[in-house]
Amino acid sequence: MFFSINLNFGVSMIKKVSISIIAILLLLIAVPQNSAAKEYHQQISVDPLGLIFGMFNVQYEKQYSAKNSFTANLQYWGYSSGIYKWSAIGVGGSWRFYLMQDDILAIRGFSFGPLAQINYWSWTGSSVSSLDGGLSVSIGGEASYKWIFDNDFSVEPTFKLFFPLNNLEGLGGLQSYGLGCNIGYAW
Image 1: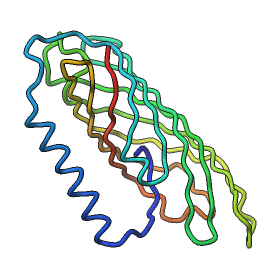
Image 2 (image 1 turned 180 degrees about the vertical axis):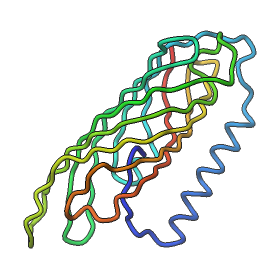
Image 3 (image 1 turned 45 degrees about the horizontal axis):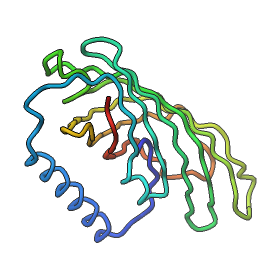
Image 4 (image 1 turned 120 degrees about the horizontal axis):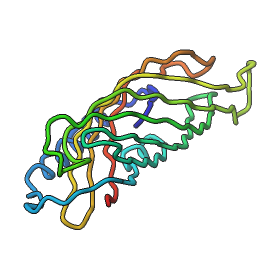
């Protein structure tokens, strides 16, 4: 997820999500990589884990040099907690550094770098106060590891750390971190 909101899930939900993420990562590590390295310069992906939290995220990545790439993402989010009912649309981007790899592997492996995210939130529920939404802006960093398999299918667990530059009334609990696992196609 590119941003997240504290939904106050119980311990059992957190355990289920954590166990699922660990199982997926262990499975991916056990799957052999393509021995004949193929160059990849672009990728498009979605984050199915975000759907658990009501968020749809699509991301595009393009390689700009042997060890750098740029990502752009678009997301939609529906959030409801008590009287607070919000929806959001957001755009963001990041600059990634791929430092621990051979040049021929292009956008595979470990990456990290800065990111920025802009979200427009709108109020869609009945109101007991003057909440009306607005713009939220965050900057931060991300780290991820991307596997690209023989059939050009990609999997990329991601951790993001955000520093919100502003707060919106009623969005209490806006967290400064997010976990995701992008699944996509590389070419």
